[in-house]
Length: 250
Length: 164
Image 1 (cartoon, one colour):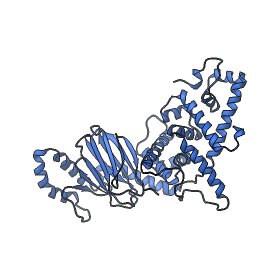
Image 2 (tube, rainbow over the protein chains, first blue to last red):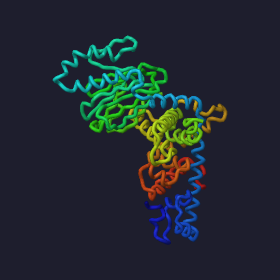
Image 3 (cartoon, each protein chain N blue to C red):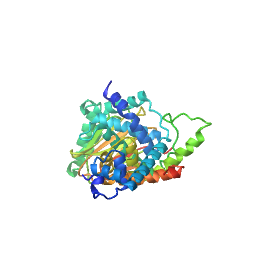
Image 4 (cartoon, chains in turn cyan, blue):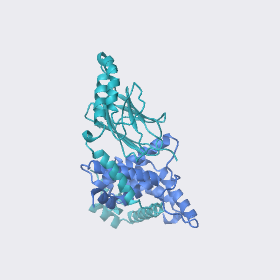
């Protein structure tokens, strides 16, 4: 790797970048030190570089930064971390996720689509077992808040559609060696109500405007384009991986 | 002391200060810091030091958020709402400080992402090599990038021009 001063020929003046590296202690080359010691012009420019660096430091200190509330910050970090670390088979809706995998993968094969549709009503009863009663659209499969859902990718494009622009939150989209798309919601900050609804080529997130949840989505390498739509507005379109903040405007 | 508390003690001060300066929004900076800590606890970094890793995740969060905000027509220029993370206000002495802060944030906002990240990482003591890795350039050219950015910032935020 080239050091800033290495590009300088012996005896030539140092660039401002090289002088800054010297000032920051990032250039240990003897030649640079020797040159500056002997060159009035470079010493003068080194002084100017140092003065600018000091002025910027003073300017940046004018931006007020109050300390974070340690207890609250760590509580949120631990809550999110604990959720991520929990083994999938210990999550209450693992059975729902497993059912989703079977349903979604099988649905891609047209010869058994009719059979799947006949079975869907009975499967849904198993999926939502233990959930509070709620109406379920016959074309959808869902899981409860805090769960992981996993389903087969149907093509190179995949859409994540959030019903509402949340108060805060983050969506991380990572690649995975698996052939299935998986999605997980974490650190919902007690708002609850976040449900996944799997649709062809799309995952709908039924969230609330007050939500502060974090979502983790993993997609296989066959998915080359992910679009994120929040409250009907596209906010991201690109190849994974990506980190997409979800937050209301003030 | 558990791992999260240890990380907080060791890194939160510099990381949060950096993210506030980078984003201009204390709430958003807190979100970014939280995400960096959660991800560090979730999977320890391989290769880079944990400090550089925390800054990298926080930086990505903020820069991605700025792009999203820009698409929504919202600019993170330091005019965001004040929150519990902000310094208490002295109504009699705040005007000049606010104006000073506005000028500095505006000057930072005029730098491109690489320049802004480089300048702010340098302020937190990162080496030119670490900064070069973070912004995706060579160690040889990061000095020039920094020197140019510092010159612009100094010119736009310093009233005593003779000192420069």
